[in-house]
Image 1 (cartoon, rainbow, N blue to C red):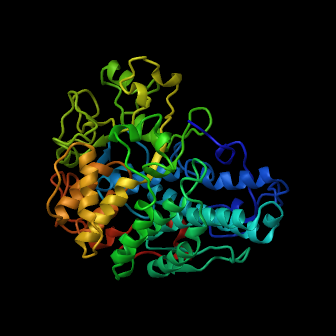
Image 2: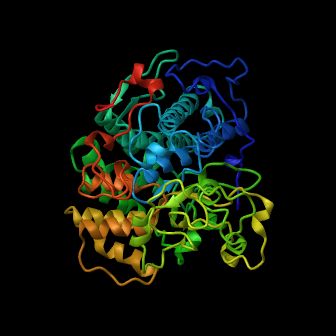
Image 3: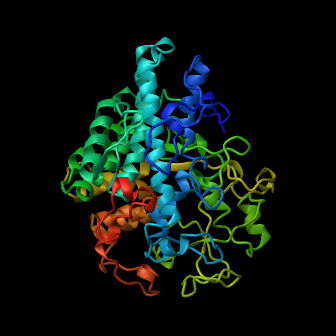
Length: 514
């Protein structure tokens, strides 16, 4: 995996407000050893690298298990475990998982706390970078174009944090480069957060470098437009006002740049998928590399966490894995059944049973099939005939895809379904053609939702998709263990949002129903 100096984990500079404890909203620096002045290009590079590192590092956030505070792991759990794709076996006794399985969480849930805290910290640190670039000598090291590009990257990273805060919590503290040191930032509601962050992204996205010119691992202009399109796609949920025309317009800035779909679906999730990152189908990824950018979150969680210790050793060898199989993350039957007959069905059945009447079972005949979408084998030896066993480490070498071009194609299909003229059906059929499936002739809510599940499963989108189509709360659609009932049951409307964690309620307030 190719790396550049901006993503090297060892080059870190922590500054000013960014070191404040995430358990409060205080913007004061509290570490006397923090470096408050950057005096070289390398130190500026390190500060920017730290912003990206916030997407896979598990420091700062205090949790009960290594990796639990990572951005990727917390947000995967709050999108997938709470919906119809995945669940966590009771073999894992980690706090907070079982309430996610059954949609019965409270404001004391560790995963909900970790997600909110990570979003706030990432937003706060990105804002500090912008302030320092504008006010603390950035112009002495970079010309105007480069300064604008780096500031736009920080704005995109802050925008990503607020996108998830808007989606998951519907409220949060607003912090930007104008926030006053030592002051508690104001709380914005969902509409205020949406309006503020979309305006900022619109004004800065063109300052990002195009994918063809951007460094590996950094945010491109196309990725910035994809983030903006994600916000617009959900605007009716977030604000009550649909913005599908604006979504399609942003997506045209992505699909019209010459980036194309990868030829083979499964290679997008293997150890050499970095070849598709940036100026390829994976528009924005969280890089991982053994020995340099390792995490117990990210795709380590989706390999080690999903693989089961009782499967034949040749199966794990084929997946290029040599560490301990954690045997926790399993698949719900709704996902398995949706993928029947679909070439994208990267699932191992073995002797497991598809149904999950028993959340506690995890042995040979246990419930829920095994996810093998993420494999540590390289593309040129996907079946691992060389038997390299993942370089002797349990860590993953797979970049985690945040946004993919195929998602942009499916979003255009949804925009067409919502009344926008944007050739969306053709784009959706290109996604199906990649895996040899016949084209669809008409777009329906059911066909779009199924295509999104089959293409994007276990990539952190499902809960939001179900909410947007009115299939999450209530009983219009039920799945196994929804609301704690094996056959599935209605969940109340207020659970379309997560509660503000207990640690933040005194300053941010609480969502209705909690």
